[in-house]
Image (cartoon, rainbow, N blue to C red):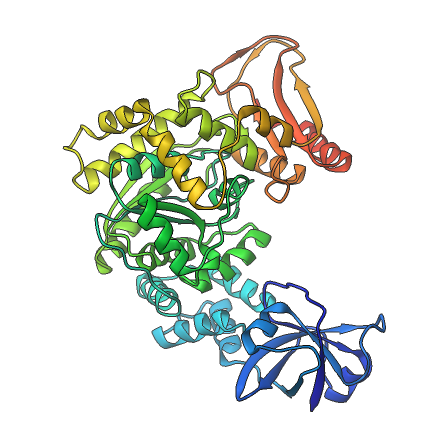
Length: 493
């Protein structure tokens, strides 16, 4: 069937087509099913939605921007529509749901279909859930890494290319911008691609996006790195391991992060970006993603697979029983980062100390310093102001600007709530998962000024009527929901 394109200029994040009811009946398609769209010998698979509002006439089709840009479509163009067969990968996902082992070619088939949008988000969700429930053995995990790398683009840089990654789950913990700035100031090449929030209230890409652009193409990334030695960008816009970005979208909705996909996600991105020396931060604790024993197992897995792909990789286990830093949410976290880099007296010492430790580990890993001397070098670079100047250079090259403390304060959520201690006590625990959830309910990371400011840490003595936290939100409803959840969940004991 041939249909006329009506341009509505909507972004769906994946190929979506909208039909009116009459056309859908003629095609015998239903919401969520697939069609093939052909134009000039090019084809794309799209998921169907159906409009009942009458803004489409019979014989018309509205296409998401993802389809329009891929097929170079203009208003009024005629496209050929056909039913798309259910891909074989759907059967393979069912095999994994039933606890079966997937062959190399089968995993490649699934990942290819994820990248080409041949399977729906619901089917990807079943795949994520099946891997979470049944896991993957070493062969399957290695195949998953290879498939995720080979279905995307790759970057190559000259020089000592280093990278770091945290498995996440710890509220705030925004060490990456500090570590990148220290390492780049030391002359190392650090093309840092980061994800958006998965299980945290904000990811590094969300935080940097509050003051600079994070979406660039590969040539733009190369130019940024050439000028500054580093970048801090969102990996999802580069086509590096594109299956990972689609999996992450679903994992965030499900609040799941299966181990096999965690390993594949991290290693595929590091391989794709051309990293030679990689530091993995594995925070452990009662409210972290993993316990210490689970962290040690994960460490062995990372090291095992890194060897297979020729990466010089080191894992460090760090304490993650509570948030690192004071701000939870993009602008609140970037304020902590800037305070550390500027050597401000209000800088959170726990965030500063961890960033120096991680940068020092990278220096020792890649031979920039002798063993045991890395932290000393990292601290000296931070104290000299060179790291802050490098941070400023990176942000400005990414079309941004380092804001003043006053500017950040003016951009924080206008609806605020101080939570006051009702009695004097000593803090015994702060739950990361609960704090992340409260930050998300407040509107983070979509609302850059939303989140939580934390006045105290574990071990602190808190006086009666002292501030525990301040909640920030962009609307009264968001603020109320966050406050209600804080009172109900009791994240601070």
